Amino acid sequence: PRQTVAEQDAEYGPRLHDRDPDLCCALRKVRPLEEGLRGYDAWATGLRRDESPTRAGTPVVGWDERRGKVKVSPIARWTQGDVDAYVAEHGVLTNPLLMDGYPSIGCAPCTRRVLEGEDARSGRWAGRGKTECGLHG
Image 1: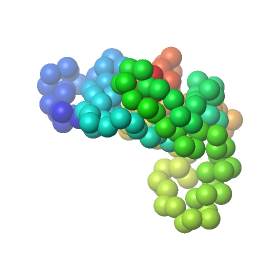
Image 2: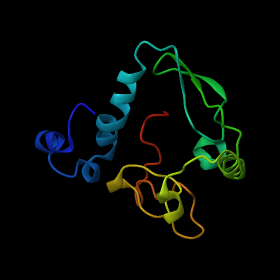
Image 3: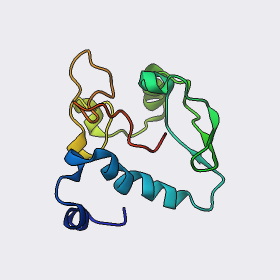
Image 4: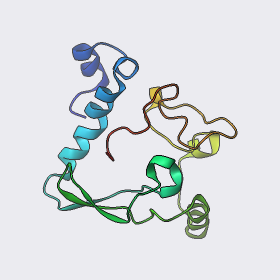
């Protein structure tokens, strides 16, 4: 992000994530991605269709209309079982939070542990209607 958390607090007030999570995500995630993608014709994501109902139609290769770029989601068709098998077979290092009840990891103030039986992304922006940060739509 262009600003540290302290600089953001000074400009927008503390705990922007509580008052306006869409703006906070735009400042801390979306704008930095857009700046990082300048000069590229395509970008790759780790989106998977089985992550949530809102991602069920994720194409493997699509067009990101907003950014005017090809968007590639090479593991869109993978299930959690496919991911687990790949991680085990190839010795992929994973974030320890995944084993501590955080199957979907976002920013610290907007992410909580997922309770038994909840959707894997339910710990993101819990108690709000928000389901995405804005990177993907």
